[in-house]
Length: 174
Image (tube, rainbow, N blue to C red; front, side, top):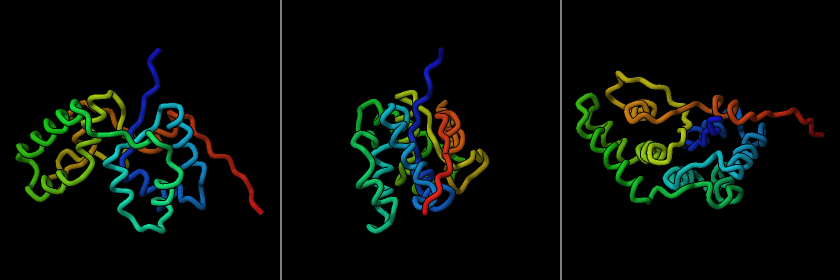
């Protein structure tokens, strides 16, 4: 039997969730499910993503969730020798790739996406992102395209929730 995948989540998943379908006041079960599945060893993110999320406004729900509700160990360290080596390989590919314009390469170098792919590649986990592949893109380096290049599996939020068998039940409040 194939083990169930472990997921590492991109910042766009958290940000889109809090701004849309899974806003904290609408669907607290989404956020609870992330913590539950983290405790089962199935859901994580990276320290680089944590930094991006904490760059938001102090009074924002997502910043408060990261600071107060996310358990230790949810955001894994990207500072492991094998992850750093994989990241260097990814960045070398990005910098040498004539498809992408210099601004796209520079922007990619400042974001967490390369670290997500490096970690996922080394640890054999799946990336969760809302981005869609666009292999012809020149002005932006998209996470799924880098995942494809380095044989890293990726999914969207709905595929992850379905795989984890997450179910949100209605509960009336008075």
